[in-house]
Amino acid sequence: VEETNTNKVGKFDYALAKKQGSTGKNWISLPLISSITTASGLTTAIGPSVDTISRWNAQLQQSEGWINVWGGVGTNFAIKRGEFYEIHIKNSTNWTLTGGVPTTEDDIELKFAGGSGRNWIGLVIDTVLVRASDIFNSIGNAVTMIRRWDSTAQTYNIFTPSAGSNFTVKPGEGYEVHVSSNVTWMPE
Image (cartoon, rainbow, N blue to C red; front, side, top):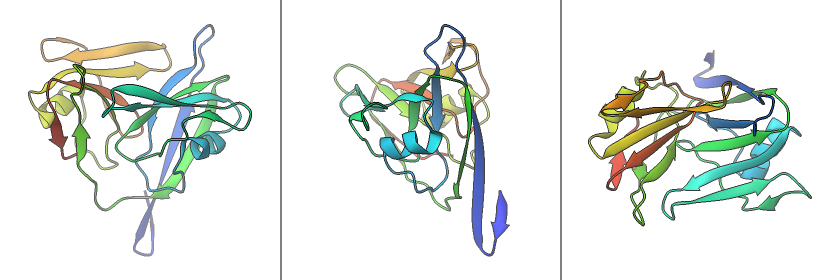
């Protein structure tokens, strides 16, 4: 983080991986205030290696997608801090996000709807959370599972209160949090 007058400017470097024979799936979040506000804008920012960008609509418990063909097909959904996005790429690529460092964050509404409680979250830029268990403890007992996508290995890391890998967490990545009831979470 660099200091510019009184405004803090941040920079995130992403290494988006495409393993041979894989879908090229990557989970990213955008913890900075940037000019990227839509799925099409994120596609343009990352570049031509993007195949699709998806988000999970927790309220409806269903996926929304933007496909990078014919000028874009699908739902050109809004990009928000606090969410993560699944990016499928054709080729491994590096991308840099720059933007302002937020001074405040909104609460995140974790939803349990229609018998499912899947939510896609990103962490705040100055998070104090370091491991999957920290996310669990911060949100509370409504959490049943936390997943992370390892884009290099193209496999899931899973943490539950009783088992799984207590993996490292950090801003810029995405985490799938399953809850058993609606929860208002103040990111920390």
